[in-house]
Length: 270
Ligand SMILES: Nc1nc2c(ncn2[C@@H]2O[C@H](COP(=O)(O)OP(=O)(O)O)[C@@H](O)[C@H]2O)c(=O)[nH]1
Ligand SMILES: [Mg+2]
Image (cartoon, protein in one colour):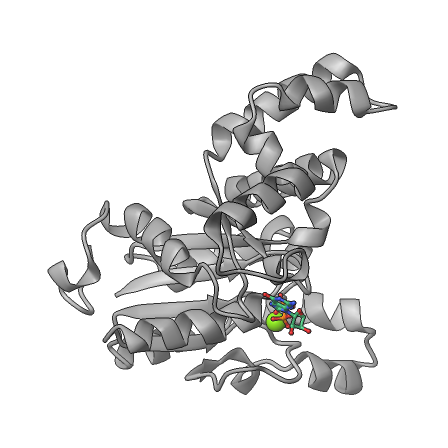
């Protein structure tokens, strides 16, 4: 079994992607376990096979301990430490080819507080795992936001220590026609500076000139670093099911070095 963890800021489309990637995999004869790992999830677009809310529910904690939404989220992740083995066992018992994990949107609790990475590492221990970091296309339009979101992805990578694939979600919002690859590629290049930042050799100079309160040299160097860290970003529409095949191929390159899962034992350790 392989783990694919879906991360990214709140609202980037993680839960929607768990639905569309899960359906795509099942259409391609793979068994999938959908894991809701968000204790604060209200309505999900898919039916979770394993659900952290069975163990810890942020809403219940808010009522029981008089917490606000942020406090309840922090408390939830702290409590989850006690149940991560149970969740892991539940996933294991389902003996699927893939476990798709829908992570909480509050990156802070999952990546930047102390216990988040401890829990995630315990969940996937012994299994080959890959992470997808989703970026909302509207947060990737400006050069400065393209840099800040890729730095956030890089910070997440440092904390969770799992291979990370960047995906640009909601591209249906910037183009009416997803069926014409040439037009789509031109639209993305013209409108989304994240594509430019990763692909265009002069983009770091452009970025350096556009920043106001950061030394241009620092901006240029940071830009070069994210360019080196992330060689590609996968354009995606989780809602329309666009790009799911490319995302699968990218995670497959990470997980099995391009081999398909069928060459591995379905639920074996590596
Ligand atoms: N237009 C568009 N909207 C999307 C896409 N993916 C997700 N959304 C919408 O973005 C909102 C947040 O999505 P959700 O999956 O709940 O994000 P999460 O907080 O990261 O789990 C919802 O209203 C989704 O319908 C997409 O590819 N295109
Ligand atoms: Mg969600």
